Length: 455
Ligand code: FES
Ligand code: FE
Image (cartoon, rainbow, N blue to C red; front, side):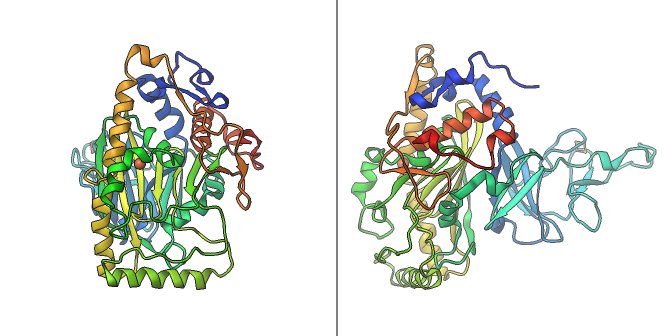
C-alpha cells in the first residue's frame, strides 16, 4: 500500500529551476513515501566485508527503516537477511555483531540457518520447538524463512543490497562513479580493495532530515565558512597545516542522471607530487611515502584513482577518500531525525603504528566528538528545525549555483563538472524525483544515458 502525497513531486522538486521544497526536510508524509519508493527499491550500502571476516560472523545493519543482518555463511558467502523473526517479528540479533551458527529467536525459539549444506536458500527455518507435538508436523517450514534481500553485490569489499529483484545491476546503477568510490576502497598502494574497517563503527543520532548529509558530501565545496574554527586550529593529517592540505585541483563532478556526485579530481595519468602528511610520526610518514611510490609504479600511465575525493552514492551513502578515510551512511529515522554511521578504513596490511595513528586522527576529526562533524551537524539540525514552521514549509531551498555552466567531464561516462556548482545536488534531487515518481528500472537506468540534461 503506497502513500498518497498531497503535493505533486514536480511541484516539490523543480530541478531545472534549482528549487527544492522545504517540505522534503520536515514532512512525515513525504518521509513515509521515501521509505516506500526509494529505500525499498534502490541499491543500499549495508557494510564492509571486513566486519564479518569469518564464517557465521554477523553485523546488524539497516536498510531504510528495517534492521538487517549482514552475515557470512559457512561457505564464505555474504548474505543479508531481515532481522525480524518470521513467526511474530522479534529481532533475531540483539547485539551489534557476533558469531552465530544459527539465528535462534528469543521469543518462541524458532531458528534459522544460512548454511548451504542444510538449507536451499539463506535464512530458511530449520528448528521449531513443538514442531511434532504442537504443530503436528504440519507447519510448512520452507514458507516461513527470514526475508532475504533480492540482490547483493560485493564491490571491492563494500556490500550493497536491494529488496528489488528487478533493480538494474549494481554496476549500471553506480556507473562511472566507481572511479571516485575506488579512491576510498582501494589500498593506498593502488591494489584493488585490500582495506578494512578499524576501530568499530561509530553510530549516533542527529535531529535532522537524512538528506542533508548526502547532499553535503555530494558536492558542497562552498561551506568552508562552517569549518573556520577547525582550519584555525590546523587539524589536518599533516599535523600543523590546515585541513585542506590536499584539496587543490578538486572540482565538483556530477553524474546528473544517476544521482551520484563527488568533489574530486578529474581522471589523470600524472600523479601529483607526494606531500608530507604525518611529519610528527616518522613511521607513519614513511609508510605513506612508500605506498605512494608503489601506487605510481603499479598504475603507471593508466587512469589514476585520486585518493582525495569526497562523494555520495544515491541515496544515503557517502565516503571520504583522503584522511580521514571513511564510509558513512545516513539511516532515515523520521522526517526530522537520522542515525549516522561512520566506518573508518585503513590498508589491511598497514603496520599497527600506522593504524593506531589513523584511528586517533579519525576520532579527532570525524564523528560526534570530532571537530569537523559537529560543525556540519549544527547546520543540518538548525536547517531542519527551521523547516518545521507553517510559513517555512511554503518556501523552497535554492540550488541555482552554476545552472547551464557544467562541462562534460572527459574520460567519465555521463559526468559533468565545474569548479563550483550545485549540479551535484540538483542531480541528487532529480534522481529523488525519479524514484518518487515511481519510474520503472528501464526508465531509471536506460542503457544509453544522455548527459545533455545538465549541460
Ligand atoms: Fe520468533 Fe515467535 S517471534 S519464535
Ligand atoms: Fe563540512
